[in-house]
Image (cartoon, rainbow, N blue to C red; front, side):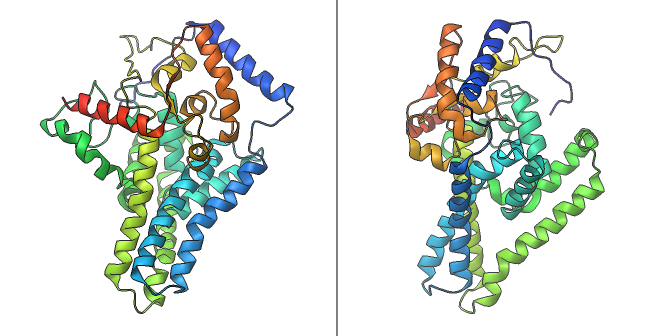
Length: 362
């Protein structure tokens, strides 16, 4: 990734960005509601943690003897992992879950550590890099996967990429598995070299210690079922572990990738002076896409990330408010003749993403 800082053209369409912010602020003020989470988010927190922890304890306490049921519980844990990540951890690490910053930091750290990730690395990659330079070549890490995948029309194309629309789904499932093993160590080294740790007022040694301790604790509680259940062989345990992570990784990757890697999304390049064409708000609208906006079930499970446009425009607002402010964003964008990208269904969004993978492979 390039270390060169880019600038947005903040003089471009300033009336639009000012009007949009004014209207969204007015919605919260007029309705006298907080931009943070509410009772619906707190109840969802209980549901999502239960979806992950209940199957874990059912396995650990050997409630069922059937290995098929153990496997099914591993699938449920994977869905619970994804639910916590999208609906709880995501808001907390953006500071939008609660008005209390300390609680946000605690919940963000605890929830992602419980799932084998690292809070600081996640915030650097997602909050700082991805949210700032969305879909910008050589800056946004989310569109710069290693080798086998090509998400960016400006990146190098390899012969193998012509088959990526078929094999990408396998690699998507490895996302959280990489979290639990090598990714955090690689990221920490890279972010230290890039100066991000210094900016965060921390050191490489301190954060490395945090990662090591959290990984030890994670595998300690993950391995408890293996040590307490005599009938559970290491192969049984490993199969369940891999299935859990694969389900979580595939779910998370599908939700995030369809929001940015489709033909509807733009992949802007800066000019020679390092300036991007549009202001920050318009840039997010042109590089992001919503899906399943009318589905309350999808919105609930994916933590409102089907309203990815609203999230990129207002990451400090909890996802429970996105359906309401989406109407404001769409109307304002239409008035100023700025694209508002969306797909009616999740299946349609997946299809558009697959088409883009095929196009990038060709």
